[in-house]
Length: 221
Image (cartoon, rainbow, N blue to C red; front, side):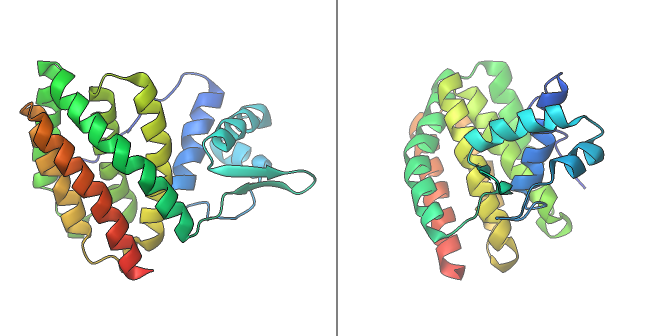
């Protein structure tokens, strides 16, 4: 089976950075469920760090809208409902195509070769043999690679935030979706278009990908 990407984002060197990445992944993969209370002591023990790095991480995650803190009640994973999908998609349908276009226009040859290689890996991926976490890591790896290739760190920051939120929704309904293999397969054409420098096609495919995701989720809600 094709090797799973080890990390979709570089892991920071500080304990707070590591705690942030670890807790973020638990939140977006729904290992911490929507609206579930966050036990910072338990997280600190599980991650092998002190409470201070965990609290710093949770502050960052609150800015990402992945957790919410209520006075005298504590911190909770943010809830989800169908209006979240509409709001997130409204932003992604504008910015994902822009990132794909900019990546096709600006990415240097070495980056294009990496994207083309990633497309080849996904093309040979046996979706039926990959668990939910694995599928989501592939999905995240593709989107993060495109955002970086666009060469705009501000655009990348915004898209990472909203892709994290979209991934939570994806995970919530993944077991009910019949077209997961098609969704994953769409990445191949998109990555190949960017690698070929075809900005118009990359922009179009990114837009179709985002709108198709929203339609697939709405069909099973």
